[in-house]
Amino acid sequence: MSAKKITKIAVLVSGGGTNLQALIDAQTAGIIKSGEITLVVSNNPNAYALTRAENAGIATAVIPGKEYKDQNAFEAKLIETLENAGIELIVLAGFMRILSENFTARYPKRIVNVHPSLIPSFCGKGFYGLHVHEAALAYGVKVTGATVHFVNEIPDGGEIILQKSVPIRKGDTPEILQRRVMEQAEWKILPRAVELVSKELAKKS
Ligand code: GAR
Image (cartoon, rainbow, N blue to C red; front, side, top):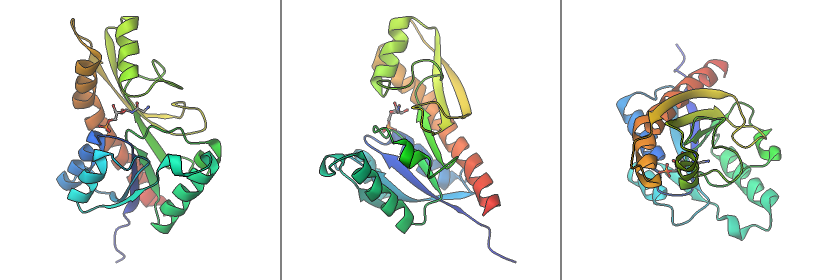
């Protein structure tokens, strides 16, 4: 009997890495079982997410955006890094750099992203991190949430995999709302979506 196929996952990060931590914890808990996080890539050398990866014994790579003359050169290095590690699924978990069509077209239905709103609200260019929650509060919506979706050439425009709603409460600040959206939605649906996609990819290979 042949060994069960496990999808090799890279997680791309830029900052604190709480979503990466949720993925690591889900792997330990057996929620993610069809895939394995084998590489964490950061475009920011100071990202705390790198420490989280090291603490979990996961290989890391740093590709500082500033050191590359343009997007093409940055993505060429990223592709080389992913290919050398045999990566089959790319997870954007707080990765604050938009990837070009040249990159996304190489990995159809093999890149997933977590976004801190209910797409199609508060998404696309300029909507990232705390700005998303500022915009939701400024608009006055009563419900927000998070979305995990496939990544294509349209920023935040790929097919939706999972969504979860989160209530907005009186007196919320962007920071309070961000934390609630992470705890109640992002950290739950990202690991579940990664398992769903890993399972599909493991079947195909
Ligand atoms: C998360 O809220 C994630 O959804 C968001 O940035 C935060 C990263 O936190 N991503 C975007 O806004 C992408 N458009 P983390 O580094 O602690 O996971």
